[in-house]
Length: 265
Image (cartoon, rainbow, N blue to C red; front, side, top):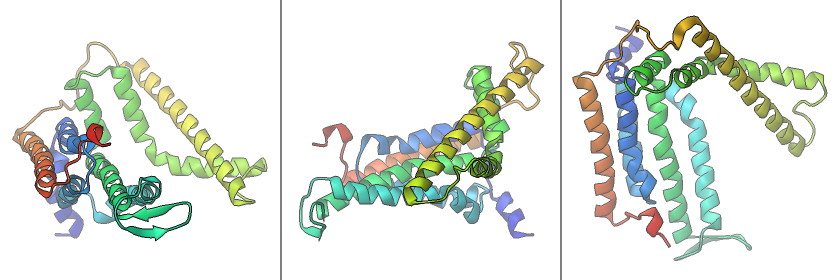
């Protein structure tokens, strides 16, 4: 049996209902929304990474989708450590700015909190078929058809973003506004190109959703080719999300780092 076949065989999360996985993510990450500490965030992050073999997603593919979160988390740690109020021993003095034990601890808590909330969502989306998610949202969550179809169209078109980015870049360079010149000029060019890509993606998704609705996909009375059902596996997924969230709270309280956001002065 090949490595890919073994990976798919262990992919328990692939067989779970997308709606149950979303609820499990909410249950696991809810403590990170109300607290600002690194222990609870670390527990959720480690627990999520431990589930990677059950997701059917290879570590390489997962890293390709999550590496930007690691970079953003590191930048968050650095930025928070610089601007936060100093407390404890000074670790680095930059003149106008300084980093202390207290500010670095707050920065680490903020960065881990951000990545701890984002990584479970990345894992769920990587292990979920967009069509299955749309079926679950429409059949079980009873969301409006136009919203569901728009979301499905957007997810299906994500693979075209890289190609669209290259096309927009060549078109802008043909007009003399490409990514060249000083670093500031490049930042401005990439910002404008990113905005153009976002507008084009929204327009294409909207046109596709309207086209699908006109063909009967959004009718009030319709049948489903693939009914969205719940099974015993979904119950275990929900219990797993609740258990991970409870474990994060218990670990933070036991370590004495539990720090509710609105009580933080």
